[in-house]
Amino acid sequence: QRSNTKLQASNRPRASSKESKMLNSMMRRSFLASSFVSVGLLPAEAVSAPRVIEREVRMTIDDGTGNPRSKGFLLKRFTGDSTPFTFQCNSVRLVREWPDEIPFASEDFSRLDESNDAGFYSVPRFVYHIDEGAVAALTQYYRKNISPRSAILDICSSWVSHYPLEFPEKMSRISGTGMNFFELSANEQLSDFKDKNLNLDPTLPYDDATFDVVTCVVSIDYLVKPIQVLKEVNRVLKPGGKVIISQSNRCFPTKAIKMWLEMNDRQHLELINGYIKYAGGFQGALAFDISARGEGAYDPMFIVEAKKA
Image (cartoon, rainbow, N blue to C red):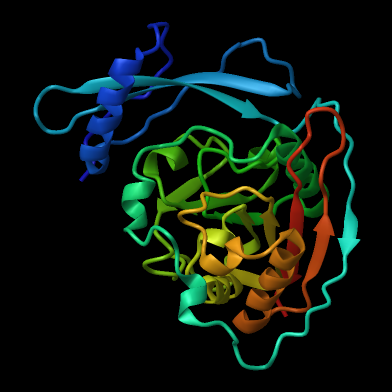
C-alpha cells in the first residue's frame, strides 16, 4: 500500500548528482510505498497556447523507516502549439498480404532484456522519447482526428499523452494505463489511470464498449503480446470507435521485441497492420506519414489506425 506523500511546487535548489543517485536508489526500493499529488504551472503568466509549459514537482517518499526523502523534478512539456514546424499527412499504402494463420514464432517476441519490466520502469523518466517536431505532429493529428466529447484511452501512457491542451475540457473522459505510477500521476491530461503491465496481463481493466478512441504512442514495439492487447482494445472500443497507433524510429533496444529491431520504418507499419488483422474485429487499417518539417524536426512520426467493425 502506498503511503501519503506530497508533490508540490518548491523553490529549493535541485539535488546534486550525488543526491540524485541516492534518491534514485531509494526510489527503486520504495516504489510501492509512494504516491503523487498535484503541481503548479511555471510561469503563472503562460499564454493560452504556449510552446512549452514548465512546472516543478516534488516527490516526498516514505519508505517506512521514518526517514522520508524528497526529490524535485522540473518538467518541461511540449504543447505541440506555437511551433515553427509545418505538418503533413501523407497516406502510406499498406501492401503486405498477411496469411490467414498467424506466422509469428515465439522468438519473434523475445527481447535482449527478458527481466521483469516492473524493474526497468520502476524509476520515473520525466523525459521525451521523441523530439518536439514528432510531438507537435502527433498533437496536431489528434486535434484534427478526435472528435469533441470523445472518451479516450491512452495505453502504455506516461507523464505526457501528447493531446492538445484543450482536450481535458473538450473530451468526456481521458483514461490511461501505463507501467509507472509516478509518471501517470504527473500526467495532467488524464482524468483517471491504472498502472498495469500489459506484458504480464494483456487484459484492459475496463468494460466493453467504453471508449471512442484508444491511442498508443511509440510503445507497441515493447509489447510481447500485441495481438492480445489489440483484441482487448477492440473489446473496450465502442462500435465505430478507432485505435490510433503512432510510431517513430526510437526505442529502448533492450526492451523492444526481436523482429521489430530487424525491421525498418516501412516494415513496422506493415507489422502493425498484421497485428490489427490478427486481433480481428477491425476494418482495414490506414497508415500515414505525419512527420513534421522544419528546423529542429528530426524524428519521423507515423500513424496506423483502424476502426472497430
